Image (tube, rainbow over all chains, first blue to last red; front, top):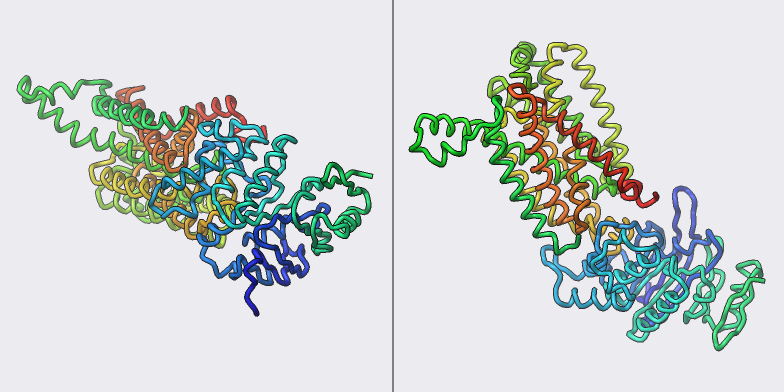
Amino acid sequence: MTSAAPFIAIEASNIRASIGKTEILHGISLSLPQGRWTSIVGPNGAGKSTLLKVIAGLLPHSGTVKLLGQDLHSLPNRTRARQLAWLGQNESSGDDLTVWDVALLGRLPHQAWLAGPSPQDLAAAETALKATQAWDWRHRSLGQLSGGERQRVLLARALAVQAQVLLMDEPLANLDPPHQADWLGVVRCLLETGVTVVSVLHEISMALHADEMVIMASGRITHQGACANPETHRALEAVFDHRLTIHPLAKQWVALPN
Amino acid sequence: MTLRSLPLLIWSLLLGSLALLVLGVCVGSTGFENLIGPLLQPQADPAATVMAHQIVFDIRLPRTLGAWAAGALLGLAGAVAQGLFRNPLADPYLLGSASGASLGVALVLAVLGGGAGMLGDSMMNGGAAVGVFSGSVLVRLGLTGAAFVGAVLAVLLTLALSRGVQHTLRLLLAGVVVGVVLGAATQMVLLFSPDSLQAMQAFMLGSTVFVGWTACLLMVGVWAVCVLAGCLLGRVLDGLSLGEATAHSLGLPLGSLRIALVAVLALATGTAVAQTGLIAFVGLAAPHLVRSVIKTTHGHLMLLASLMGGALLMAADTLARWLIAPQELPVGVLTAVLGGGYLLWLMRRNSRSFTGGQA
């Protein structure tokens, strides 16, 4: 097997994954470019979150996943964790931890086992909390925050890893529109620094801000292409049974229900 | 309260424990008696000083310190269990260690036969249930060893049934199954060995009456090892509190770290149970008491919960000696009543933390 080209962040080949006895992903292959934002969309049950978990190395599967040219499963845990950050859907709460503790957890892959956080770790956690506007609550416990506030802290935890690849499953859950716009700003900043972002999104209009789009249905990829590409729009409308239409608006694309 | 209150809480618990230690050595079958005065002024009454020295250093100090150490072990184990199972109602006995220890003690009592009778004779000492912990040194060693081995074997059986530690829910269910089955086996053994019933009851209620310097030092040593290991493993529990997927994504080798946590849990619980019997609610209540005043990481929580557990059991032990002196209440009964009442109040006050945020 040939090694992946350097501009490919993630390369998956013939991925099959099951939950229980039900096969969810049926032989998926895809390549995700480095330094770009790819959004994965599709109807409920399409296998989007399962695919993201496979890419993150969180689910057993057949087939191969390469992260920055290296087989994901051959990487030591900590090396993988430094290169690939994960923000899950409905993460457990950890209510007793303070916001600061949660952000610092993102630095675990960088810390020696018996060592405390270094100045770089503290700086990274502070930067991440400021980026998600959660710095002011750093002394509050997670249990004292609303759903949206909590989501911003969890995003800060993922940002604090400072990984080259960031995977996010439903990162906009519980965020109000202004903070969805802030999230967009955070993603654009990451892209400017060369980070690869992959997100599963249900907010189609937000997903259309990405560079690339992977459209899924019934455990298979039905289309992969640039978000600005009309073919992508047609595939998107088709996968949702033409119950939405993509429209241009103020130099953006928006999905409106029919 | 924030992290800045941590040193304050640690010092409060240490000073509180010191005050309880002084109180504990002054309370006996005659109620409160000032034994510190004769020790501080030996020239005033040399005979009283000799007596006080004997009572304090041979009996009450090891017992009171032993109560602290057993409570500290249970408090630490409670914090580990609640973090590992991500369940605020988890307690140190959840992996079957209590029923394993009980079965071990019941088997030894049944095998001893006459020994059990002998223990039965010394069952009530001034109203205190002490049987299992009295008797000859060899019998005690056998019972203590059986309790420890039973506790550890029960945890190993739980691990075998759950096929490792990868799935927390499976581990939890296996622990419940082992607890129920070994509990039934204990009852079966007792059915065929009715002489052991009284002594067994004493074990089930818990007691610190016969904790001597050896047991005390053993518990303190195990506590030091467990608290160090617990603090080092605290970050694993912090990661796990954000979910399995997040903990895995942070590069934590969950399999081996969970085994280490279960080992700490089994060692701390097995050691405490072997020396003092089944003392209820300390392991469950201590972490909650800490959480009610401070929100912090699991590393700090484990240290604080063990200090809180030590103070709780020392206070309960002193109270058990004092309340109906010259008779003595089984300390396990007192911790169950006080701890249960406190938890009930805590659940009513803060239902959210007991329902995983669903309330």
